[in-house]
Image (cartoon, rainbow, N blue to C red; front, side, top):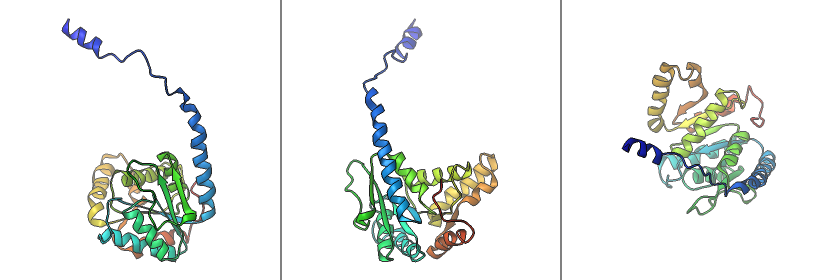
Length: 234
Protein backbone atom coordinates (compact mmCIF):
# COMPACT_ATOMS: atom_id res chain seq x y z
CA UNK A 1 0.00 0.00 0.00
CA UNK A 2 2.82 2.36 0.83
CA UNK A 3 4.39 1.87 -2.62
CA UNK A 4 1.05 2.49 -4.31
CA UNK A 5 0.50 5.70 -2.38
CA UNK A 6 4.02 6.88 -3.19
CA UNK A 7 3.44 6.17 -6.90
CA UNK A 8 0.21 8.14 -6.88
CA UNK A 9 1.92 11.10 -5.21
CA UNK A 10 4.57 11.22 -7.96
CA UNK A 11 2.14 11.43 -10.86
CA UNK A 12 2.46 14.45 -13.13
CA UNK A 13 -0.35 16.89 -12.32
CA UNK A 14 -3.17 16.83 -14.83
CA UNK A 15 -3.42 20.60 -14.93
CA UNK A 16 -0.99 22.37 -17.29
CA UNK A 17 -0.26 26.02 -16.59
CA UNK A 18 -1.41 27.78 -19.74
CA UNK A 19 -1.05 31.29 -18.35
CA UNK A 20 1.73 31.91 -20.88
CA UNK A 21 -0.44 31.23 -23.92
CA UNK A 22 -0.01 34.87 -24.91
CA UNK A 23 3.66 34.08 -25.62
CA UNK A 24 2.64 33.37 -29.20
CA UNK A 25 2.86 37.13 -29.69
CA UNK A 26 6.56 37.04 -28.84
CA UNK A 27 7.09 35.76 -32.39
CA UNK A 28 6.96 39.40 -33.52
CA UNK A 29 9.74 40.35 -31.12
CA UNK A 30 11.79 37.41 -32.35
CA UNK A 31 11.20 38.41 -35.96
CA UNK A 32 12.26 41.96 -35.14
CA UNK A 33 15.57 40.77 -33.74
CA UNK A 34 16.28 38.70 -36.84
CA UNK A 35 15.35 41.53 -39.21
CA UNK A 36 17.50 44.05 -37.35
CA UNK A 37 20.45 41.68 -37.12
CA UNK A 38 20.31 40.58 -40.75
CA UNK A 39 19.97 44.14 -41.99
CA UNK A 40 22.88 45.59 -40.02
CA UNK A 41 25.34 42.71 -40.28
CA UNK A 42 24.88 42.20 -44.02
CA UNK A 43 26.02 45.79 -44.54
CA UNK A 44 29.14 45.39 -42.39
CA UNK A 45 30.84 42.90 -44.69
CA UNK A 46 33.28 40.04 -43.99
CA UNK A 47 33.91 39.46 -40.29
CA UNK A 48 35.51 37.02 -37.87
CA UNK A 49 33.68 36.11 -34.66
CA UNK A 50 35.76 35.99 -31.46
CA UNK A 51 34.75 33.98 -28.40
CA UNK A 52 36.20 33.51 -24.94
CA UNK A 53 35.67 34.06 -21.26
CA UNK A 54 34.04 37.24 -20.01
CA UNK A 55 36.12 36.78 -16.84
CA UNK A 56 39.53 37.20 -18.48
CA UNK A 57 41.12 40.45 -17.26
CA UNK A 58 43.36 42.94 -18.99
CA UNK A 59 46.98 41.87 -18.60
CA UNK A 60 46.14 38.16 -18.81
CA UNK A 61 48.08 36.40 -21.56
CA UNK A 62 44.89 35.43 -23.38
CA UNK A 63 43.47 38.95 -23.15
CA UNK A 64 46.58 40.27 -24.86
CA UNK A 65 46.54 37.47 -27.44
CA UNK A 66 42.91 38.23 -28.28
CA UNK A 67 43.66 41.92 -28.67
CA UNK A 68 46.65 41.23 -30.93
CA UNK A 69 44.82 38.61 -32.99
CA UNK A 70 41.87 40.91 -33.58
CA UNK A 71 44.18 43.69 -34.69
CA UNK A 72 45.83 41.32 -37.17
CA UNK A 73 42.43 40.17 -38.42
CA UNK A 74 41.42 43.75 -39.21
CA UNK A 75 44.74 44.29 -40.98
CA UNK A 76 43.48 41.70 -43.47
CA UNK A 77 40.23 43.56 -44.07
CA UNK A 78 37.90 41.65 -41.76
CA UNK A 79 35.66 43.18 -39.14
CA UNK A 80 35.50 41.67 -35.66
CA UNK A 81 32.29 40.38 -34.09
CA UNK A 82 32.04 39.63 -30.36
CA UNK A 83 29.32 39.30 -27.76
CA UNK A 84 30.13 42.87 -26.78
CA UNK A 85 30.91 42.04 -23.16
CA UNK A 86 34.04 42.16 -20.99
CA UNK A 87 37.05 39.84 -20.98
CA UNK A 88 38.07 38.28 -24.27
CA UNK A 89 35.22 40.08 -26.02
CA UNK A 90 36.52 43.45 -24.84
CA UNK A 91 40.06 42.53 -25.85
CA UNK A 92 38.97 41.59 -29.36
CA UNK A 93 36.92 44.76 -29.82
CA UNK A 94 39.86 46.79 -28.55
CA UNK A 95 42.19 45.11 -31.02
CA UNK A 96 39.76 45.78 -33.84
CA UNK A 97 39.66 49.48 -33.00
CA UNK A 98 43.44 49.64 -32.72
CA UNK A 99 43.68 48.04 -36.14
CA UNK A 100 41.28 50.55 -37.63
CA UNK A 101 38.71 47.85 -38.41
CA UNK A 102 35.02 47.41 -37.76
CA UNK A 103 34.27 46.48 -34.16
CA UNK A 104 30.88 44.80 -33.72
CA UNK A 105 29.17 43.91 -30.45
CA UNK A 106 26.15 41.60 -30.29
CA UNK A 107 24.89 42.34 -26.80
CA UNK A 108 22.34 40.27 -24.92
CA UNK A 109 20.13 41.16 -21.97
CA UNK A 110 21.53 39.43 -18.87
CA UNK A 111 21.26 40.04 -15.11
CA UNK A 112 24.02 42.24 -13.68
CA UNK A 113 25.47 43.10 -17.10
CA UNK A 114 26.64 46.64 -17.78
CA UNK A 115 25.98 46.76 -21.51
CA UNK A 116 28.53 46.51 -24.31
CA UNK A 117 32.18 47.33 -23.75
CA UNK A 118 33.68 50.70 -24.66
CA UNK A 119 35.50 49.38 -27.74
CA UNK A 120 32.44 48.46 -29.79
CA UNK A 121 31.73 51.00 -32.54
CA UNK A 122 28.51 52.87 -31.80
CA UNK A 123 27.18 52.12 -35.28
CA UNK A 124 27.76 48.40 -34.79
CA UNK A 125 25.98 47.75 -31.50
CA UNK A 126 23.13 45.25 -31.86
CA UNK A 127 21.25 44.22 -28.73
CA UNK A 128 19.30 40.98 -28.36
CA UNK A 129 16.86 39.58 -25.86
CA UNK A 130 16.99 36.03 -27.23
CA UNK A 131 20.21 34.05 -27.08
CA UNK A 132 19.23 31.90 -30.06
CA UNK A 133 18.70 34.93 -32.33
CA UNK A 134 22.07 36.31 -31.29
CA UNK A 135 23.78 32.97 -31.95
CA UNK A 136 22.43 32.90 -35.49
CA UNK A 137 24.16 36.22 -36.19
CA UNK A 138 27.53 34.96 -34.93
CA UNK A 139 27.38 32.11 -37.43
CA UNK A 140 25.60 33.61 -40.44
CA UNK A 141 27.87 36.60 -40.90
CA UNK A 142 31.23 35.22 -39.72
CA UNK A 143 33.86 34.08 -42.19
CA UNK A 144 35.71 32.41 -39.34
CA UNK A 145 35.63 31.68 -35.61
CA UNK A 146 38.58 32.35 -33.31
CA UNK A 147 37.96 30.77 -29.94
CA UNK A 148 39.93 31.60 -26.80
CA UNK A 149 39.71 29.87 -23.41
CA UNK A 150 36.21 30.25 -22.01
CA UNK A 151 33.33 28.60 -20.24
CA UNK A 152 30.00 27.04 -21.16
CA UNK A 153 29.01 29.83 -23.55
CA UNK A 154 32.29 29.57 -25.44
CA UNK A 155 31.96 25.80 -25.72
CA UNK A 156 28.36 26.21 -26.84
CA UNK A 157 29.35 28.44 -29.75
CA UNK A 158 32.27 26.20 -30.72
CA UNK A 159 30.30 22.96 -30.76
CA UNK A 160 27.25 24.49 -32.42
CA UNK A 161 29.40 25.73 -35.31
CA UNK A 162 31.08 22.33 -35.55
CA UNK A 163 27.69 20.60 -35.62
CA UNK A 164 26.28 22.89 -38.30
CA UNK A 165 29.33 22.40 -40.51
CA UNK A 166 29.46 18.66 -39.89
CA UNK A 167 25.80 18.27 -40.86
CA UNK A 168 26.23 20.63 -43.84
CA UNK A 169 23.57 23.01 -42.58
CA UNK A 170 25.96 25.89 -43.21
CA UNK A 171 28.98 26.50 -45.41
CA UNK A 172 32.31 25.32 -44.06
CA UNK A 173 34.39 28.09 -42.55
CA UNK A 174 37.66 28.03 -40.55
CA UNK A 175 37.50 27.55 -36.79
CA UNK A 176 40.64 28.20 -34.74
CA UNK A 177 41.16 27.44 -31.07
CA UNK A 178 43.85 29.60 -29.48
CA UNK A 179 45.40 28.32 -26.25
CA UNK A 180 47.09 24.93 -26.56
CA UNK A 181 47.47 24.44 -22.80
CA UNK A 182 43.79 25.16 -22.24
CA UNK A 183 42.28 23.24 -25.14
CA UNK A 184 44.59 20.25 -25.62
CA UNK A 185 42.79 18.10 -23.03
CA UNK A 186 39.49 18.58 -24.84
CA UNK A 187 41.11 18.04 -28.23
CA UNK A 188 42.75 14.83 -27.03
CA UNK A 189 39.41 13.62 -25.68
CA UNK A 190 37.72 14.35 -29.02
CA UNK A 191 40.40 12.40 -30.88
CA UNK A 192 40.92 9.57 -28.43
CA UNK A 193 37.36 9.03 -27.25
CA UNK A 194 34.90 10.37 -29.81
CA UNK A 195 36.79 9.21 -32.90
CA UNK A 196 37.70 5.84 -31.38
CA UNK A 197 34.14 5.27 -30.17
CA UNK A 198 32.85 6.15 -33.62
CA UNK A 199 30.61 8.97 -32.42
CA UNK A 200 32.29 11.26 -34.95
CA UNK A 201 34.26 10.55 -38.12
CA UNK A 202 38.03 10.88 -38.14
CA UNK A 203 37.76 13.68 -40.72
CA UNK A 204 35.59 15.73 -38.36
CA UNK A 205 38.70 16.57 -36.35
CA UNK A 206 39.90 18.55 -39.35
CA UNK A 207 37.05 21.01 -38.95
CA UNK A 208 39.08 23.01 -36.41
CA UNK A 209 42.67 24.04 -35.77
CA UNK A 210 44.65 24.50 -32.55
CA UNK A 211 47.45 27.03 -32.10
CA UNK A 212 49.05 29.61 -29.82
CA UNK A 213 50.19 31.82 -32.70
CA UNK A 214 48.00 34.78 -33.74
CA UNK A 215 49.71 34.93 -37.14
CA UNK A 216 48.94 31.28 -37.79
CA UNK A 217 45.32 31.80 -36.77
CA UNK A 218 44.91 34.70 -39.19
CA UNK A 219 46.75 32.86 -41.96
CA UNK A 220 44.42 29.86 -41.62
CA UNK A 221 41.45 32.11 -42.26
CA UNK A 222 43.07 34.06 -45.10
CA UNK A 223 44.36 30.93 -46.86
CA UNK A 224 40.88 29.39 -46.69
CA UNK A 225 39.46 32.33 -48.64
CA UNK A 226 42.08 32.03 -51.34
CA UNK A 227 39.98 29.03 -52.43
CA UNK A 228 36.48 29.93 -51.20
CA UNK A 229 34.06 32.81 -51.74
CA UNK A 230 33.43 35.35 -49.00
CA UNK A 231 29.68 35.24 -48.33
CA UNK A 232 27.13 34.70 -45.55
CA UNK A 233 27.11 31.10 -44.39
CA UNK A 234 23.49 30.30 -45.20
